[in-house]
Image (cartoon, rainbow, N blue to C red; front, side, top):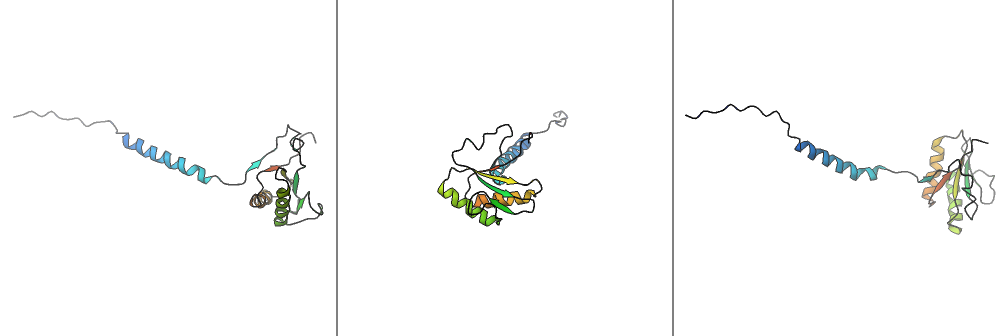
Amino acid sequence: MYLRKKRRPVAEINVVPYIDVMLVLLIIFMATAPLITHGVKVDLPKMSESDLVETKEAPPIIASIDAEGRYYVSVGTDPEAPMDAVEVAAVIKLKLQQNPETPVLIKGSGRVSYQEVLLLMDFLKNAGVPSVGLMTKSFEE
């Protein structure tokens, strides 16, 4: 008769399946992360550089939003006349067709909602504006 040794239970955890699951999750997140990012591409001006606009050959097109949410454009027949966002985008699109290198800046009142600025940026993006800058006041002013 053979004597059988009692086997002790193995107290080790097999981690290979966990590593496989982690690698699959990593691949999924790496594949989906670029798809999640969306929005409007914005070039924010730096406060320390005052020659942001002076370096460009053409004067910038400035789209303004006042505290009541009215839109204005620095170019066109009457820069002081309020317009809606679609008209602003159309005027800027026309000017950019004439000179595509013209920078476009948004000057928003401090009391206007962030949603209004994003709405204007979205209209400009749909009109074909390649990049939009945001105007700010320096701390010295």
